[in-house]
Image (cartoon, rainbow, N blue to C red; front, side, top):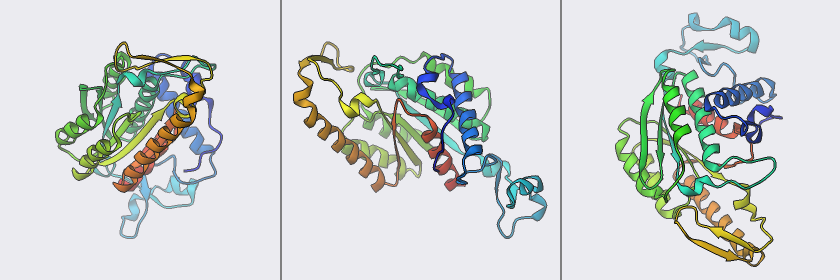
Length: 304
């Protein structure tokens, strides 16, 4: 999908002023749907929730003639069993996800950004009558809420994301291997993380999900500071996952080497995801949330 100019409702800086994830999720999804209405690109239909395109052999009695009048295309109403999808949202709550710069306009922490994306996806999925579950984790699974397809289920997901405080180190590969064995029913795995782990071990763990017949989308969340390293003055850097670990450095001396290492890491993760047929979606915490919603919808339509 190619997006046009997006409503401010999708802007993380504007949404950073709001506290309730329930409100944020609704605004993000409504803004995204408004963008679909306005977009000249027809990759998605706003009627995607309850319809699919007519194919030869379908009962013509199921054609939605009102929708035909608007779209000049034949669509039929989907049955409940055709629309159900089981999704698992895996949200990284390790210490590194708590990073956010002192910037204007303010940017959310990576964890807050991930929480907003997870909340919006949950809201959209339940509108689709899909079942959605949540896992928050750092070096261990902190909370697992099994997938449900009931509207009341949203409140539990929002509350868990709101009360979770990022902390401790992480071991993505071990967590993912454990979850791959725990999730008995096949579904869509959605990872929201900065992916700070060894790429080879991480790829092995993600491949474990694919071996279990899950579809996987990885949202790689990074702050712009981590990608551009804009520091120019003598700066003290602190490890956000290992207590009392600080280093005073001259950033300009390390910038080129740092950027080379970061870009190599990102490219390695991207290639490994491609190798194992995993959707890889890079996201920056100052960018709109629409990429996450579009990636989910694209994958959902393929699975249909």
